[in-house]
Length: 262
Ligand SMILES: Cc1cc2nc3c(=O)[nH]c(=O)nc-3n(C[C@H](O)[C@H](O)[C@H](O)COP(=O)(O)O)c2cc1C
Image (tube, rainbow, N blue to C red; front, side):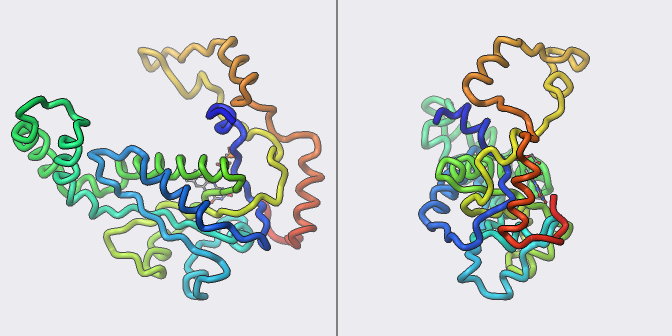
């Protein structure tokens, strides 16, 4: 499947097969993809604690969030708690030196010397400001997105879940103070159809993107849209006609009747 089609077909999958374990090598591929994502200054602040439902202690299971539709955590054979290690930025200068040695930054013959005089002092001055929510979260989001696509490629379903109190999760899981829990991602084999009811709605393209000036919407060429529809990146919008029947079936099969479902 081409990348465009992968992007088009990936859905948040909320209904997972609770009885079917997920092989750890599949989770490893997700983590490998996350590790390779871009990070500012190459600081690599994205971390993850992988929780296997059938092996984790009750204390760890109890630490996981019960967000809207708490049934999602209950169904998931694997849950990945993605978090940021803000202390990673303490080593930004070292990461920069590695980047220069790797030839990623074009400083020529005096590369180390130039680096020590230019970028390193800037990074040292930035200090704790870069530990606040912001740039680091963007890096982490890129890593989580790559892991999500690799999960899909391997036939897995995932859904990211926010939490009202991420710091409570951090404390209960015993993560250091320097860490911030970002999002919890359920992982398993989908119990729902791959379409999962169709492609989810988005705000209109023209409302989101501009070209050259803020008051100038980026022109959306219909021939590009037609091409992406042909390639499977833009798909039939949800809800497909049979979605409600599928949801009723899933609730019954997974014994979710009475739960607050979304
Ligand atoms: C950071 C993040 C947090 C999310 N939190 C939740 C959540 O708490 N509960 C939930 O059901 N879905 C959650 N989602 C999934 C979104 O609702 C979903 O991405 C959106 O509805 C679009 O659907 P799609 O991913 O299938 O395109 C979250 C997604 C992201 C990226």
